[in-house]
Each structure stands twice: as C-alpha cells, then as structure tokens.
Image (cartoon, rainbow over all chains, first blue to last red; front, side, top):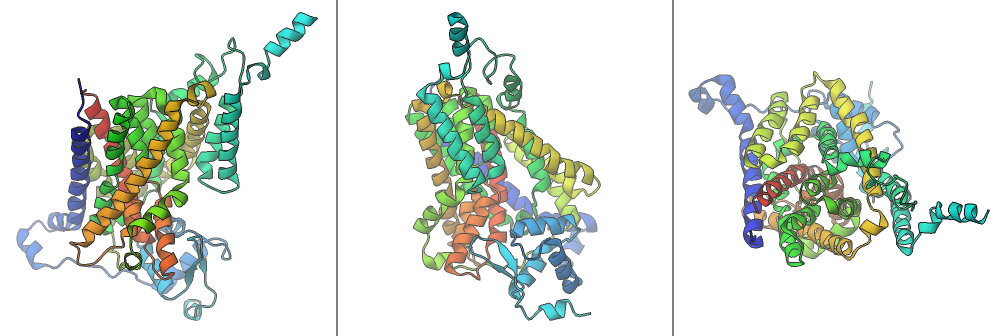
Length: 130
Length: 378
C-alpha cells in the first residue's frame, strides 16, 4: 500500500502534540484536582483559595546543607547535579535555595555553564553565623 | 612448513584487513578521542567507540566472533539491541534520575517538547523522498528526537538492518549538542530575545503530585500512543520508584548499577555492530546527513514554537529554551543556559529549559510509539 508521507507526518505530529497538550492541560490543573478531591465539595473549592505554602522554613539552614552537599567546595558543579543531590537528601524545593544562592551571589556561573561557590559574597557571614 | 606459515597467515586478522576496516578504526579512534579527551558524552561514546574497534578487527569467516555470527558472545549481547530490550531498561534508570518538578511547575513548557518533535516527522518526509522505505524513513527521522535509546528501540522494530548507523548517528549527535545547536539558536533569535529573563518563582510541588504524575502521565500518553508503552512504562516506573520514597533501594539500583550495566552492554554491542562491510555504505552516509538535518530541524521547530508562544503569553519566555525540546537531557538545557549567559551572564534559564528538555524525552517516546503503530498499518 502506498503511503502519503505528508499525511503520515501531519497525523503523527498531531497525535504527539495532542498527547503532550493534554498532558500539559492535566498537569496545569493537577493541584486543583487534588485540592478538589481532598475537600470533596465544589463549594469549598470555589470559596477557598488554593494555599501556596511558604516555600522555605529556614533558608539559611537549607543553604548550609546545599553548600555541604556540593562535595569539594573548590570544584565547580552543574546545577542539575547539585539539585539532584539535594532532592535525594530530602530537600523538597531546591529551586528556591538555588534562586536564593544566585540572587545573593553565593554561587556564580563560569564560562562552561558550571557554577562555583563565590567566597566574596557578603551573605556568607549571615549563613555561617553561630 | 610452507603450508603451516600460509595457514597461519590466513588465520590472522591482517589477512582480511581492508581499507574499510582502516576507515572504521579511524572513526572509532576519533570517537574515543572525543569521548575521553573532549569529554563529549564519554559514558556513551567510550563504550560505543571501543565496540567499534572490537567490531572492526577482521577475523577468518570460519570463526564465529562478530555480532552477526550466530552463536558468538557478541551475537547474544546484540540481542538486547536487535530485540529492543536494552532501551526500556535504560529508560527505568532515566526515570529514576528524572525530576518532573520542572514540568509540574511550568506545564505550559511541555508544549515546547512537543514542538521539537516536528523535526522527526519533517525528516521522515525527506528520507522517504530519498528513496528509503517508510519503515527506514521513520527510523531515520527519530534521530531528530536526540534520544539514543528511543532511536534504537524504534529502529529495532522497524528497520533492524539500520541499527548500526542510526545508533551511532543518534549518539554522536547527542554528544555534539554543544556544537550543533548554538549556531541555530543564534540564527533564529534576536539579541533582544536571547536577553529575555524568566521569573524563577517555582511552585512547590507536593509529594502527592510527584507520585500521581508518573501514573497519570503513563495512562494519558499510552492511551493516545500505545506503541510508546515499553519506553514510557519503564520511564515512569523508574520515576515512581524514586518519588514513592518507599522503594529507595530499587530507585538506587535503577539509576546506578542497572543503567550503568545496560549502557555498557548497549554501547559495546551497538559499536560492534558497525562492521565495515555492513556499515560503510552509501546508505549510512545518507543516514548521517539526514540525521543531522533531523536534529537541526527539531531544534529550529522548538525555538520557532517558543517565539510563537510569546505572541500569546503575557510573561514572555526566552525562545532559547525551545531548543531544549529535543530530548538530549540535560545537555541541550545546558547549551540554552550557556547561550543565554553569553548575552547576559546574570540570566539563568537553565531551570526553565529543563521542562521542555524532560518533556522532549516523553515526546520522542510518544513519537516513536506513533510511528511504530502507524507504519505497521502500511
């Protein structure tokens, strides 16, 4: 049987796109769906605002942990590697810490896309204050 | 005495050595160099290129040594490739390493992972008009997914005779992401676009969401494209082992020893399958050319779709992250960060680029499943 390559390509792409679009839509509403099922009431769903929990309980402590997790402090590291270590060590939201580290200049990027700990940041005193 | 000497010579590899073996050995040495000294995807390139060395040492036809010789050790190792066993095993490990929080935080970026898959289908058309069969065209197109295991899996199902060149092309281009993508990124974006900064206020993802996601995503994706079940099933299995937090031992095994062992076996057998007489053909050269085209088109589609999204989004996204929609994880996300940082060293888009990057893995697996199921009808 002859194949129409254009039709095949378009239909294939449409399936892939619709699959991921549906996934995207579901994920966008996942926390709402969870909230709904946790509260079992449409009324309460409308009335209550979805709670956005405070992101870090103690950012200083978490930053210290992140610093120790990076291993050799003088070696540069890739952010995803550090984040993975942090997640494996129980940090629930490493991005918040990373964001803090970047904003406070505690870590800086080098030309290869890796990061290194910036000793010159004024924030270190605060972090390692007893 | 003379007969013994002649017999000895006829039983050496040198007797069967041709210029084709020489060329293949040179290519293998070059890949070894790239892997070891230039650190281009060493975990993949080193076993593959060493396998190429093994596969291109000639031997007498009476001996059963190569991957294509029934009964040899390499033949049995190669069954994991030709029967499509290794790729799903690798996907368990990838799943156990993957962090889907990026996707859960920014679901809209999943669409970039879908857009980049256009490269696969556009290349399919090109390969078809180059005279390849629909099955071969699909296997060539999937190189654009920049996902080695997926490329090997689909090729083993549709065009097993092309596994050697397609696997080598797929892994080589994955290794060459930092070389191939930046010029395309710069060509398709203005400096102003590359300077776009994105807010890093990531939503906290609850454990429930992290656990529900692999189950829900598997059901959703595989109901649409059941052909992707072997890959996505293993990917999400690996992820739930990690996120459930009650199967840490299994998650550790999946992302450590399992993926390492399978990578070695896959690399060595794919490399050894590139025997000069099978590999050095005009077809292989065309596959390499179409492969890089597929990869480039996928990158372009991701970037252009990001620009299209910017026409509708209030908070603009940096179009460079569209290039990360090809699923070379995490290299293409790193490349997006490096290109953005060249314009503004304080611009951090890496975490945003991880979302399309991870969704690209899912997208290319779906694309492979779709091609497998659709091509089967013709």
